[in-house]
Length: 160
Length: 116
Image (cartoon, rainbow over all chains, first blue to last red; front, top):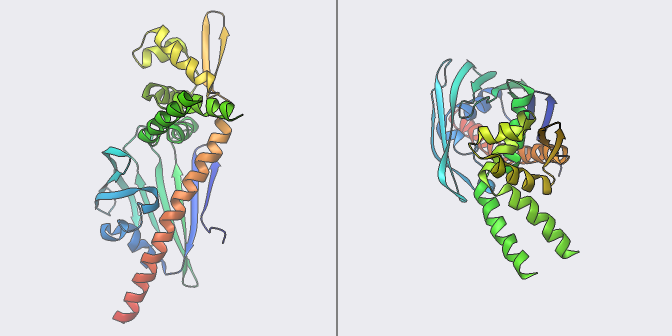
């Protein structure tokens, strides 16, 4: 089956992910805002990521902090920022402050016939910021994995 | 052939295994820069930075061009492929998240029905 998740770079500064969920907007919105629910889906097990903690203060000006562990990394990773707009059940906007030039994330929830279209916009401050994020993440998201691979390749190279 | 592929892969992964070189790629993702600027930014000697850029260049991740006395570095031709690969990786991440979110939404819906 083809996946129903789409991700597109819609402009120099913006990435957009979409998916439709089989449920009303208020339920989907709840799953995006309650820590005990966020922890069940935000860090996919297939990516080897696990939640260490999840705190959200979901109101305009409130902050959030997600901390993850990864099998290949000893250091936990923290993602944090502030909620800029909270409009249940249709709109959430937050900042991503763990990195310089981080994106502003806007999530919209549009309900139709009992289903909810979720659109996640990541708007970067500049084209350079998004290009930089792509260059950094595509090469360095999990440095330890590259190091392990490097060791392996060195071993292979030595035996050729 | 196997040796050729191993050598190519080796060059790429060796290039990426070093924190400074990943930093250089990130920096060049924002804008082109001279070797001198990169050396300054990463607190290294020119010779040290030249070596790092040489490794990235050999792996095809960076290209350089000398104009007068200044050698300018920019991301290599693989950048477009990298962007496509990154976006696909990003899509897989969201897809995995959303599959899990589907289950949460299903469960919340069931609970609501029971509570009614």
